[in-house]
Image (tube, rainbow, N blue to C red; front, side, top):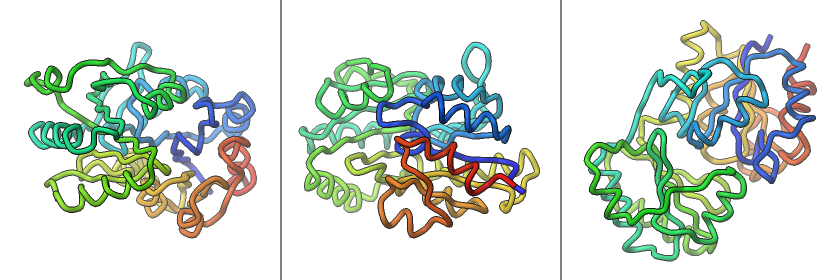
Length: 268
């Protein structure tokens, strides 16, 4: 019997406009199963979906870098795992210097910064419905008290993404994880910030067995989540290698795949 559902957001719960459709929300609510969102997004980018689904339990942001409890006025951090500040600043400076065509932005627990707007960020704004604070990188990095949870790079040129991945492999910065998310995104978090880590926290907190859990996802950064749950369900729009690692495939994110998948595969 399923007692907890975990769901990725972009490409999974959210449609192609970055929203939870009314029909998807109705299907999920009707199941009356606890849902924890497990996302690379920041809490400020998860709030609308949390409200749409009426979620009250702990949620997982920044690929597991921040586990938090939503409150009436925001959220309460439960477990925070930011990157080492010096390493995060070195990565930001290096990417800006070596990959000027790559869209670069970075997140603290409460803020989203970028040195400039570009095509990649315009797409991100369209699906997140939020706008980054545009500020010169040097001015942001000069602040001594910032804790960075995620560095996001968007390479619209596939060849540039390959070069970016090779760059990170060669640098081997300690204590960080660089993971693809979708076809154009490379996201950097603390190495200890894994979706599976957040899931283990939820399992321990609510005394759940792995067999009592299920997860929906579509991307490479969802694979640790798939391995941590009893039932892994990929979206129809997921990459082939993600579908191969799943126990079932539901409809696409644009076709209310999470809500439909709950009723097709998980309800008694």
